[in-house]
Image (cartoon, rainbow, N blue to C red):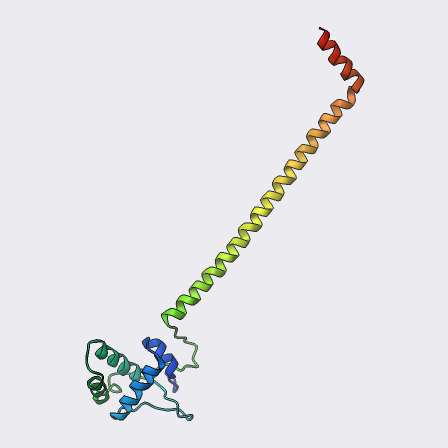
Length: 170
């Protein structure tokens, strides 16, 4: 579904990986040569798909060492509107455009959050394992001490003392 709204300068600059000041300069030069970039009621430029195509082509020409004035003249005289281009989706639509840097930052943040959650979960599991080990060791120690004290209760310490003396004499 096409929308009547286009993109603002910031979105276009991010998409083309240029600065907004470069985009503004290119837009002014194109407008001086007769290329029409629509504006909204606040007199801000609104860029549509045909404008994206024109600006991408301008960027290619400049990258191929074509002088800026010649590239501007070539783009301004070309009819991008008739090249099967419609308006781009609105800046208010559900579609979101991100630059590579923004996407990388979002992915990096998500990975860091996930790593933090995994480390917290690992720490909790380790803590639980240590607690369980300590409970088992304590329980076994109590059982051992209870069994040992139970055997000592059957033989008094006097008997143990004399028993040892008898063993030494023999």
